[in-house]
Image (cartoon, rainbow, N blue to C red; front, side, top):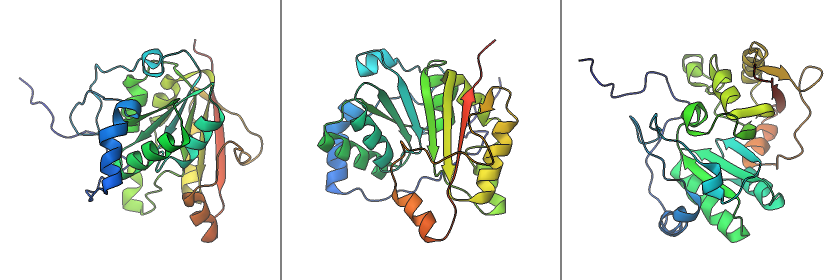
Length: 241
């Protein structure tokens, strides 16, 4: 019999570091997780998604509505702002760092946001199988870890093969929005997605206009403060055959 693998075969785009949780963060997981955090059946690792696990958006949100997915939501500033200003849409935040998940739950609860759910999982696994095919109206990737050292670029989220994952999750005509302050990563994103037949550019010229639905976060301010240009991209999911 073949051996059952213990580790993922593909590198992930993050490194989880254990850290002490504050009392408020602990409270978020104890009191708010039942409302916001989806309990995902695991596969190989603590952030994996079991191959047979499936999300039911109608059940999770209690309605049928357009679904917007943010990968790497951090402390939740962007997605909480969007969810609170657009109550007729539903939002899903994918994040692996527990402190960020806790902060998101606390701030969402304080703002009275009810159309937001969180998944603590490796994003490609969520896109590959956990979300129903074509469930997302948009997928957002704002300021992902650039893994700027040459020996680490293989860890970048947007690399060869990522287009298949994003295309599966998006509805026909759905949008993939990206932003980064690292020029070489922006060039890689554009090269990868330009080569994907399941996507077409939804912008003219070299780069897309800044997405006005994206609030200014600490990551964007930090990039600007260091003199780095912010580059946006947006791609449209082509119709399925």
